[in-house]
Structures are given as structure tokens and as C-alpha cells.
Amino acid sequence: MAKSIKSILVIFALFFFLPNMAMATDYPIKVGEKLANGVANAVTGVVEIPKTMMVTGRNKGATYGMTAGFFIGLVHTIGRSLSGALDIATFLVPTTPIVNPAYIWDDFNRETTYTAWRMR
Image (cartoon, rainbow, N blue to C red; front, top):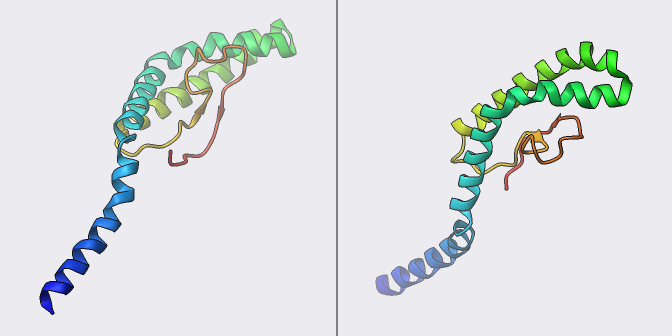
């Protein structure tokens, strides 16, 4: 009787861990992507200033882009750099990037937005 209970428990344990093993194959890739994204955003955050000045200048005029675009870019610089630092600190938890676009060079003609974390 005890032997059959042990075998049933082993079978249940195997079925419990099989889906986790299937999902764990992508884990190193997701963690590596998040770490690379965090390092890139922490380093290139300062590029948000000229990028935002250009985008704002195209949309609302050169004077507005040079003045208000600079300060908006400064805010985006802080946001991108801090989100990069947060991604570096929590790279073991695979989540989607907070900053959109994920890398500053992905879509240089679009203003930066921020979203909530989601699990990958």
C-alpha cells in the first residue's frame, strides 16, 4: 500500500514539474534580453534630450522644440535611465520593458512613452 502511494506521488510530482520545465527553456533568453535592455537604457538615456527636442520641434515648431523639448527630454532621460537601472536590478524576473520603444534607436521619430510591467 505504501509503495503504491509513493509511486502515485512521484507521478503527480512529474506532472507538476513538466510544464515548468517546458517554460524554463526560454528563461535564460528572456533574462538576458532584460539585462541587455536595462544596460542599454541606463547608458543611452541622455540621448532622450536631442531626440525629444527633434520630435517636439517637428510637431509643434522649432522654438517650442528647443525650449520645452529640452525639459521634456530631460524628464525622459531620467525616466529611461531609471527604468534601465530598475531592469538591471530586477533582471532575474522576466518582464516587458517599461519604456516604449524598448531601445532608444528602435523608433527615433516617436516620443517615448511608459507602460506598466507585464510578465513575459
